Amino acid sequence: MEKNKYTMQKDKYTYLNLLTFSILNLWDVKRYTSVTNLEFANRVRLRDILVPYSKSITKNEIIDNQWRIIAKINFGGDLFLREFDEVSTYKGNLTLVPENSIIFSKINVRHGCIYFHDKGKTPFCVSSEYPTFVFDETKVNGAFLQMLLRTSEFKKLLNSKSTGISKARVKKDEFLDIEIPLPDFIEQESIVNDYNLKIEQAKQLDNEALELERGIEEYLFNELGVNHGIIKANKNNSFLDFINYQDIERWALSYIFKNQLFSFKKVKYNIQPLKSLLKSFDGGKTPSTTNKEYWDGDVNWFSAKDMKLLKLSDSEDKITTYAVKNAGMKIHQPGAILGVFRSGILRHSFPVALLEKQATINQDLKAMVFDNNQVDNLYALYYMHVFQKLILEQAQKTGVTVESINTDEFMEIPFVVPPLETQKGLAKCIAEMKSKISDLKRNAELSKETAQKEFEKEIFN
Image 1 (tube, one colour):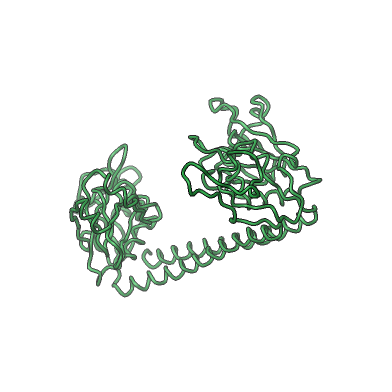
Image 2 (image 1 turned 45 degrees about the vertical axis):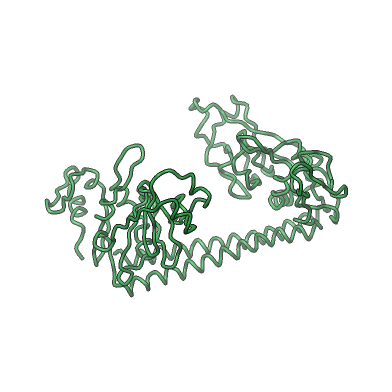
């Protein structure tokens, strides 16, 4: 196969790049200083297989056909559409995207924002920021083309073609000028089928992990005797809400007017308010970001962005021991449980994690130390993780700019307290289920990585 001429020159010279005049299509420095190591056979230019498609469409036509308008293409190549009722208020010209077509985002194509609208799918509408192309479906497999252009090597190539400063874009002609490998149609289909098979296997593993996660909830609900999702406030009237007296567990308007999804009436063990089980409950803070002596040390400093795992030992940002002493930072010991009390993530979840190494925290987190004569740390961790909807239901502040947890209401959260040995047994079972979930997710990711590697191996040498 012919090696990319530019790459050969780049390998040979350190300061000067010699280019053959015949390959200079445009006088653009960026285009020729961006190195690409792509090597492949069956080269074709996109302009040889893609035909620009631009059919203007009116709002009345969109409404009559119940079509929708694009919201975005994400970095995963997935399409998101606006709600139908947004059509009437949309400003700007729109064009139609028919079935069996491919579109890209001028701004984010270099990040993989390319979408294939398969045959048989409902048309939708886009602005001029999303060029649309059709192609001969007997020669080009749209899914193959989308996958190819979303590989890391082609993302780099597309990035080299972006122009502009504040919002760099890839122009349509620049996109069409790209060379790609195009095997015969049968081979394209075979490659796509092999890829999809592994992706489907990954999806099945992810679904198993999700079902097992739900199984943890049901397991703990059943073991504790908590009923879930059975109590609702009656909202037949816009001004008056009627709630049965026996359903009222706390005399607080903020509590009564929230949807009560949990019932503790048939709980098998003792119930205590969370505050009665805590030895300490502390917030954190951020050392001055202008003082360089406070940062890049070896002391863990956790914030909401670190709260992705149930057990934490290493933070993304770290502070120095000098900051701990001079900025008045409190060191929390292993066994403390961290919770996010202020963050946008509280719209849908309440992240908690168990500290495995000593650390400091920022002002968005709280550190809780449980009385281990009453509560096992792992049990407390899994309890709050499973009952995070309860915590949001009863303690989430509403009507504020930044979502947060009301500390007073949080302290009143009902906490089921079985005997310590029972708590440890429950925690052990949940830990084993969590381990299986981790294995399933790990294997799913491995299957996705294998699918991508094998796809690229089929295309590139």
